Amino acid sequence: MLIELKNVSYTYGTGTVYEVSALENINLNIGEGEFIGVIGHTGSGKSTLIQHFNGLIRPSSGQVLFAGKDIWEPGYDLRSLRTHVGLVFQYPENQLFETDVLKDVMFGPKNQGLTLEECESRARAALNQSGVPEELYSASPFEISGGQKRRVAIAGVLAMDPEVLILDEPTAGLDPAGRDELLGQIKYLRDKRGITVILVTHSMEDVAQYASRLLVVHEGRIAFDGPPKKVFMNYRELETMGLAAPQITYIMHALREKGLMVDVSATTVAEAKRSILLALSRRASEKQE
Amino acid sequence: MGEITLGQYYPSNSILHRLDPRVKFIGTILYIVSLFLVNSWIGYAMAGCVLAVLIGLSRVPLRFILRSMKPVLFILLFTMIFNLLLTPGDVLVRFWIFRITREGVSLAVRMGIRLAFLVMGSSIMTLTTTPNELTDAMENLFAPLSFFHVPVHEIAMMMSIALRFIPILVEETDKIKKAQMARGADFESGGLVRRVRSMIPLLVPLFVSAFRRANDLAMAMEARCYHGGSGRTQMKPLKYSKRDFIAYAIELAYLAVCIIFKVRGL
Image (tube, rainbow over all chains, first blue to last red; front, side, top):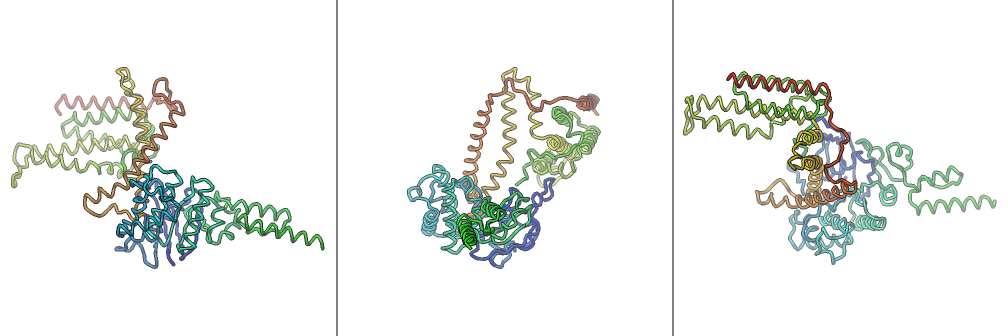
């Protein structure tokens, strides 16, 4: 197991009037190469959860293990952990600060103590992977477009060459084309370099299309954990949590109710199309008989 | 983070919370004046009793009031030690180049009491009054100054905006700090120069975001046709009730007693 959480609980503002329990007794195993989607209502604790993975938040109780070692043991190198577990926050473009794009992306590798040449080659590779055109490398990160800023910020984390990449709503505020492109690139990275991806999102469609495992966080607990298809079967429960299944799931269930024997576990448009065509041809052949 | 004492409001529904903020504001000023008016042990005992009663009425746990002392503890000790060591008079103890005098001890203790009461007294106000109520009270009390072309409303508006933005900026700082830490930034170790340099990745984005937010807010205010104070009404205008007049009477009585103490030389 790459990341393990054992009985992790976290309480905000301990000892003040505003004490809030954000996570309660979380047990979780994350293996190498998984593509995990994390969904949950605003304030469900999902952002708090992902910050436990790279040691930005210390659990109030319980253990966090990376590659079998407790990260809160005295003497554990948290800074090095954070280069293994890269975390891209929501609206990551707000963290840009350098005078040009290339230098900003080099910040992470520099903190890893690499030589300047290595930093630069890593930065160039990361920018290339995130799809930032080369003519922008010397531009100020404050003068490029919003979508490009987002890519530069993600490259800033990728340049550290992490084994786990956590993204907190990376597509928020992007247009549909930018969203598909970004998610495509993330999937490509996972398939090509075998990194583990943890994607926090509000879009059920994205989860259905990319994730191999889905975590549903509700009121500080993990409500569901499993393949997206199985989790979306519980769409009635998801609705009580302020969430929903992909729209396709609803269409499939509605078709089934009207008597068309489609596969209700279909979650993407492509799957649905296949299943509907299959059901229609089956019905046509039944009628001929 | 979260240790910011400005806007340390403690939510409750005590009689002090329900008082008009103007009463509390004037009361705090009178209390501070009284602390510098009285100069006798009886006077301090009385001020202490008043403070104890106020703390009891406020229903704020004592530790929250004592916590407000933390930032001024250094100044408090500093003044006390200086007064203790550098006051001429009857020598009690003598060591190295210092002489501790009877007058020095008495002055140091009095200074200490004054400062401690002053901070605790004003923290009762900030603990029982929301920052917004406070700026409302100030705007209302200083309104006559606009006669002398002092932009009272604008100053009050700036104050409430500034207060409103403090928690937002604290949160923002926390976010950016974490984002940079996720990129391996180190804010804790190293010498002074390294530490100051390590703040650049934090400060640059923070300033950029502060300006962006200020710009957005200005735009939103203009879009709602905000054009300063003249003719503006308030959503929740301050209104005195009976208990506020009683509180004023008590405040004045307290001040009168202090003045009598002063005149009598008690």
